[in-house]
Amino acid sequence: MKSDGGTLVRLTLSGGALVASTAAACCFVTVWWYWYYELDADCVQARDCKCLLFGTSFAGGGFVGGDRFACLYVTYSLVASAGLGACACVYHGCRALLCPSRGLRRRHRHHRPVRTAAETGPEDGTRSVNSPQIQISSLTACFAIILAVMALNMFIASIVLSNGYISTCLEYVHRVKSFLMVSGNMVELITNRMSCGTIYDFMDYLQPPSRQVTYELIHRRKTNPRDSVINTSVLLIISIVLSWLNTLIWVIFTCYTYYFK
Image (tube, rainbow, N blue to C red):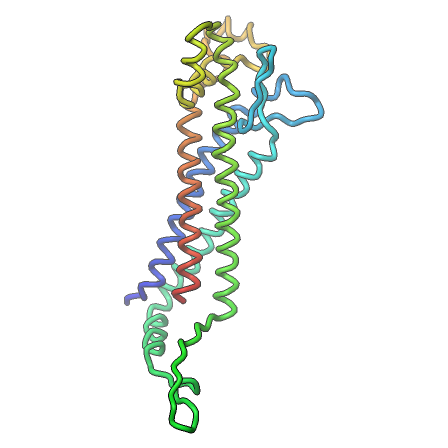
């Protein structure tokens, strides 16, 4: 049994959204929880600085994370996108397997000529030709609105994620300067030529721990205060790219659902 092409396209789009949002969420949550407590050490009690996005450097050399709300928003948006993608996959997958001939019957019905009053013209023999009205069911309209809202939400979440990545990179440059104790042209080199990937590499290996672990470091002979070193920049870039890809998929899904019923 063969299903109609529209159902397969929707199934592909929903599956792509599910995979992209799930992978982006896994990468971002890994980075967030890795730095969850490390960036909150010097934060004032009135704030919650457990988010890597929009971090802040202080004149005294300290560095704290941004407000946790930004990380929560990005995480929940990706999880909601994955949930909607999973629901769409199940729905269109069931349609493709259980109702393969429905789209074919609808397609045959759609091509039958229908004469409207506007096409027959008035009684005096003249003929006025108007473009046919596109009729959309309430269920399709509701689903298209949900997809549009998700596309808009993912667009905002992608902007937050991208801007947070760049903001933390620009702020951590001050920490790199203090680590290297540079002067002269070295300052311009670090400020203008080092990529954000290199800046985040300094954070991975040189960011001091938020808790006193000197005794543990001596006895465990560890050069890094954390149990492992992750590649923060790569994980964030992957989550950013997949987040924007997810946004594009939802936009295409919305347009396809509205114009190709």
